[in-house]
Figure 1: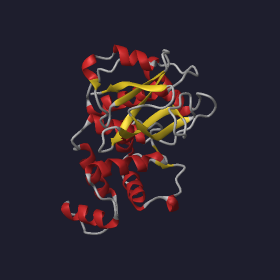
Figure 2: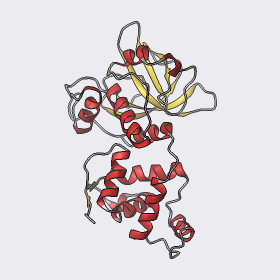
Figure 3: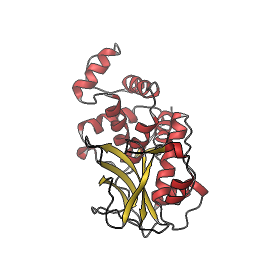
Figure 4: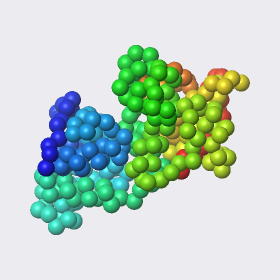
Length: 264
């Protein structure tokens, strides 16, 4: 069994669930860690970095798996293992089996993959390791171009691979081209978790895009995950990172909502 390397993690600053997730990942063979990371779109095979435990925590939260000490004890008891909160290779293998046997939901997976990149920042205008990875999602090239749609297309490709699904979203880095050329039956009247929201800048051909994460009860207000935006309240193109934002169906300023697209 090949080993994995832990890099850039201060365990003293991790939440209890994240510490449990880290213990599980450290106890798995490198091949399984790499498979999990590939599923959620994380790079650096053989390395457990700061985003890896959080991605596993998010998976467990979606599946209702409790990573608290009490939850681990209960999980082990349900698997006929010694009732304790300790995590070793056998316990880790059981958790990984639960991950492998999950019922895939592409929309949930999209939200999970997108949110795992919240906090990514550029290293210079439209530059940086992750940014260039997003830019290459459509044409394999990173040329310093705006990357909000590149981020979306990267997340879609990641989920297509992990769920063996195929999206009908048009492949382009241009937001309004995606809106116009994607099948019309993907258009939604209201936002739904996992769908795309596309904005148009005035009457121009410029736009912006993000994933809808959660929708409030009124159906008009929602949270999004967007790349190439900023931390302010407006609809910002050409920002510096991946952010979670509060949005509504009216848009802001000259950026108006063109519409919503179902991805799968």
